Length: 340
Ligand code: PEP
Ligand code: MN
Image (cartoon, rainbow, N blue to C red; front, side, top):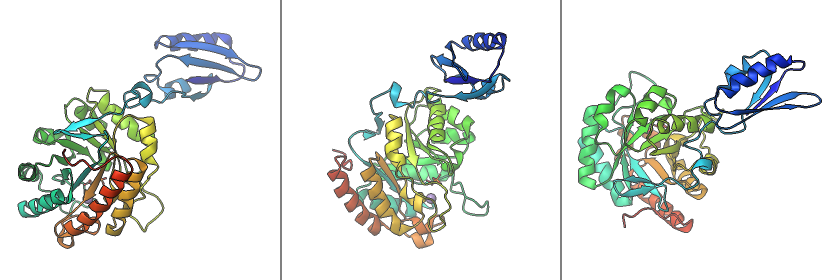
């Protein structure tokens, strides 16, 4: 971290600042230049609050050199993190495809969809039991019953299940869930992240609607700093000025996150675009960009879906998309996990 001091700061003030900084377990090096004076901090600065330093009236500017995330940082953990989800490896040399309905609506809807997803080659099952809806009058999810139905579908298909948590108060219902999803709207629910950091389950952390990649990595850091290192990062599109798509898929986030972090990266082309026709090309773009997993919405009857009907693939359409994904994934050297 570099601290630039204001011109003509009395040396007594500089010395006071240096001794207060050195109480934070870092070494402060004073460099007096012709035009300005700077203090370079050496050591672990993640705990140092730049705003507090800036509050000092002799400080002109504070610049971080090190990234503020440590556990999620590839610099401190060069090897890729590989998560084990019921024996399936996410983050390794196989591509995982998480598929299933936006919402769990009924036993028939979920089972029919889950069986079709498995047949097409999906490797995990998604389904929302708690739904974050823009309107309180829209379908809110089957809640506890939805989780029970997912467990039933897991029994039927053998597919591990991924479902979203919206409140800390519901955590006790997730004990048999294989992957807990934190949705875009909760990416910065820090108390929820800290609590998930104290549980021993893989967490699929979605990027917030208007969040930077550093903010996403800092949210992963919240979970990891509490002890749970089983985190995957999910690019699900961000809000831009473009109204023709629901969001804009930031494909560049994939290689960038993989460069900055050792955590696996998932791409959700369904919420990223909101348009059925775009799910295939964006899935392929994500695979080509190097993602570790895709999360795709599939519904046995999208026209009558209780949420996100316009972006959910029919089982037939999903099967066709899967064939393309399988071909490309094999070509880029990360084949779809076939359980072998
Ligand atoms: C979802 O995956 O069901 C969902 C609500 O996604 P997001 O949080 O990305 O909007
Ligand atoms: Mn959805």
